[in-house]
Amino acid sequence: MRLKPTGARKVVNEVSNMLNKKVNYEGKQTTWGSIILLKARELAHYLTGKKKELDFVKPEYEIERVDSYEIRQKILNISYVDWKKLGFSKGTLHYMKQNAKSDEPFTLNAHVLERVNKWEELVLSKNKERNNLCNLSRI
Image 1: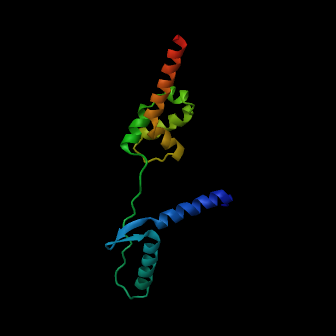
Image 2: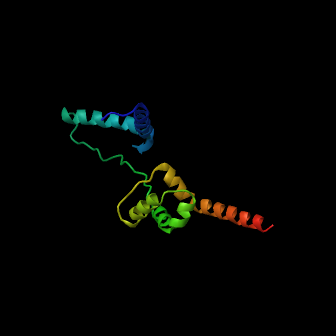
């Protein structure tokens, strides 16, 4: 598989960010890059017989999940009419609702997640604009 330069840059940046994240390991804050190096050394010592045990379980990698209960509820409570009025695709909301109903983990693109997180604000601001226009038309 070949990536375009911009895609390759994104992948490299994401991997770099992940390797530079700090985690508590043996009482110290250590980057994942350093831990991988330490674990590779442990493996080498195990394979050469210098070490009797091998532990790849610690530290445990924690995944930040996007599909929390709150996000699922927000998605399920969004009306198709309001979503469409704000200029968003009805199909996107349809598949988001299907994912939210299932028990399976799912991800959202960053811009869609931002919309969902700011949903109440978007709807309120749109309603205020509509009310202001109605009030102006009465004058």
